[in-house]
Amino acid sequence: MGTPVMSTLPPLNPPVRTLLGPGPSDIHPRVLAAMAKPTVGHLDPYFLQLMDNLQGGLRQLFRTENRMTFAVSGTGSAGMETVVNNLIEPGDAMVVCVNGVFGGRMCDVAERAGAKVTKVERPWGEVFTAEEVAAVVAQAKPKVVGIVMAETSTGASQPIQEISKVVHDAGALLAVDTVTALGGMPVEVDAWNIDAIYSGTQKCLSCPPGLAPVSFGPAAMDVILSRKTKVQSWYLDVTMLASYWGSDRVYHHTAPINANYGLYEAVQVILEEGLEACFARHDLNHRALKAGLAAIGIGYAAQEGHQLPMLNAVLVPEGVDEAQVRKDLLTRFGVEIGAGLGAFKGKVWRIGLMGYGARPQNVYLVLSALEQLLAEQGCRFEHGASIAAASEVYRGA
Ligand SMILES: *Cc1c(COP(=O)(O)O)cnc(C)c1O
Image (tube, rainbow, N blue to C red; front, top):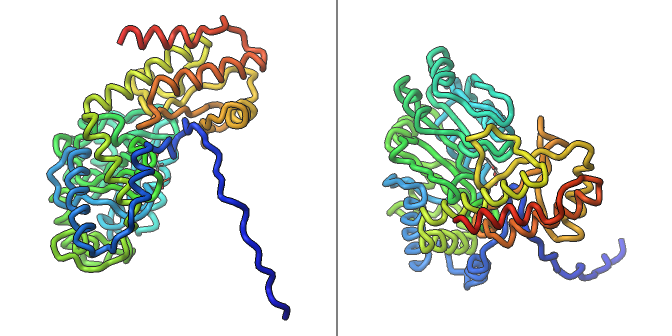
């Protein structure tokens, strides 16, 4: 055997993009700077204080008093597994509402946890009514009902409050996915009586992927503390994580210190702006983009009246090579947007205006780039129409 040849790797030089897809979204510069600060130990008094403060900030974002509010070390899907795996024991019944990719993922996670899953289904882009959920819940008598608030694959915004009422009237717990919703639209854990909730850092929180804020209410904690079986995942067991995030400070796993710095700063940026101002900014930029797209003949995929501000799933015009447009956006304009998934594959583009990315300059950038690329593919509209329409919205604001 010869000596292995040593060579250095190519230099690390990622391109600068404008991330206007379904996530990750553009990172706030203050968050990137925060993540470069000195790493301390995971039991350092400085870090323990930071964890307490971060929990306080997350409670404000979720609008909850829940003590069990913290950041799971993992992406949004780890948040989903934390909620489902802790609430479900093998053989428990769970109802999952599915009208896109992430509801489907929740079914898979629940089945792996041993749940007997009943699906409530809706075509992609539509939302659920409280009545149809009530009807299924009355039959299935589940322990938990899971639903996605902002379905990133379809751009549909699911009202939660009425569904919460029918779920609780039937004696079940409500688990909500707010990976895309949190930080971009109102999420009211206490007022809406949500028992368990999770999010992710890389959508409207403008932070790199890697952490999943979660919160468990008193009824969910009662269920978890009276389990007959151990939580199937050691890493995501909330009772063990509670000893680290709570006052005991028992070592569980090494928290990703610098990722927590990033989330801390991201939460701070939102609290400084104010939640209401932040939601209003997402709404305004969404309306400007929507007006601009309408002016060049592009409509939305999700049900009217239920369109997400931070994720615009829009219909690709007839005859347009959608993949070519996305490729040109990336290579010529440095702009990333998302393709359609599942039922929307090849039919839909997903334009994210999330967190730091929800700014007029990004709306103008993606509209002007789309005008150029669509004109090259033979679409006809008045040149500059989308920019004029978006400007009109901003002027009226
Ligand atoms: C992105 C997303 C997830 C998954 O999060 P990851 O960070 O990719 O693991 C789950 N639910 C929704 C609604 C999402 O948009």
